[in-house]
Amino acid sequence: MIKPLFGVAVAAVAITTSSASAQLFSEDWDDGAGAGRWSAPIVALECAACGFDGNVDYAFNYASIGAPPAPGTAGGTTIGIMMETNTTVNRNEAGAAVFQGEGVGVVPLGFNLPAGDFVLTSDVYMFWNGGGGSTEYAGLGAFSGGTATPVRFNIDNGDGLAWQADTDGDSGVDLYRYEGAPNNLETPLGGYEDIPNGSIPNVVTGPSKIGPFNQWIELKIESIASQVSFSMNGFVIDTFDNSGGAFSGGTVLLNQSDPFDSVNADDIFGFSNVTVFDNVVVTPEPASMALLGLGGLAMLRRR
Image (cartoon, rainbow, N blue to C red; front, side, top):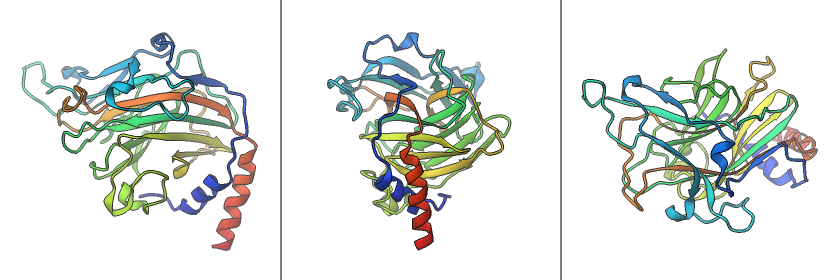
């Protein structure tokens, strides 16, 4: 279930400042040439004989699904990278319809994460087309080797450390952590209903568990002194203890997956349920994190 880090997460929102850091990596896809800077789609399939029936668009105009410019966008542009999965009825070599969970991911070419502390952020828009409850997950990962991408039900645990959040709370378990080799673990982190409403800014959780669909959110991975955390809109959802050094090096992973066999149909706007990423940035950890640690400890002492 969700780890009890809620008090520290509130401190993070209050204490962390926007102190400038040199960017180690950034991508906004605005020039339309992102396909040359990112890998070909990395695919994970439950039914290898069925093939991949999704798509990656490296120069997607997300205004076409009604999304406004992402919060981190300069100049009002609306170009990002779009991923979709399970868009047709999957069939095996004999032509029979079969269960197919699948995922797709991409990594930037020629970029490796630093050995020291870092912060990875991305603006993410999980589009739900209104055609029934969705079962798509958006994922952000670090330390990826660029050879695997995670999908729920142990279809694939990826090759780094990654987290996924689903679109609208319709999947039972909405939040997952994936650990690739050598750990090869999938860890359920609970549902949006397990997080008190008001904890994640601008995302409805608690009993209503509406989730983050059809709005821009910020997903973040912070690696600080061997503690790697995953947050949504500044709220820390999970922290992984990497003090054993299981994960290092590698690069950034962007991911979408659908582990269920329902067809991801294009019900509204002619689009299936898609995930859009924009404004991916990696920076060294800012000095303000020292204040964050002190603030979190002080709050825990008071509690």
